[in-house]
Image (cartoon, rainbow, N blue to C red; front, side, top):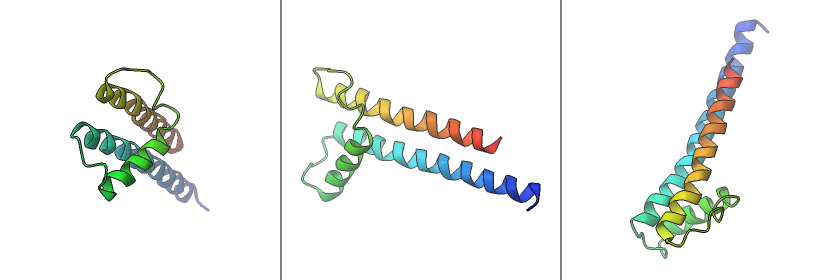
Length: 97
């Protein structure tokens, strides 16, 4: 296997990690948006996105006990989204170098 072929595989892995991080952060971001817009929680799409975001941000959704619901969701879920982006993109850059 040539050096160019190995580098291509490493670059592909970096792109895959970056895309995965973007998707995970996007799911959380979409849930935050739907929550702030008061989307119908009985809707199947809203319920699925809530469950996925809750699972992905399970470690951070009660990190800060904020009284206002909208701010608590924005901050605690937002932290998870930013962490996924920072770690995912950082790892992708590391894989490409």
